[in-house]
Length: 68
Image (tube, rainbow, N blue to C red; front, side):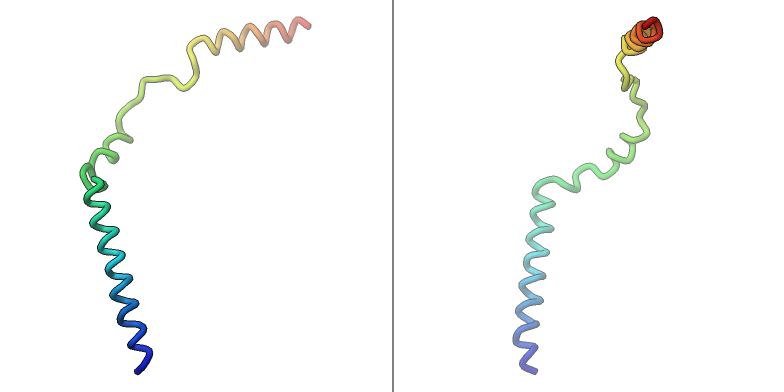
């Protein structure tokens, strides 16, 4: 029975911390846009990951390496 004197305040403390954390996430705007990230992955990015002149530079260096 004496363990309840420890467990009940501990449970209330943990619940208070969880509620405060939840309120902080609401205040900081974590739940504002729930659909945006889901649609963002479907949008096509036309930006190439490799620079345009990289292919030309690679060909030039390959030609120079094959000549030597």
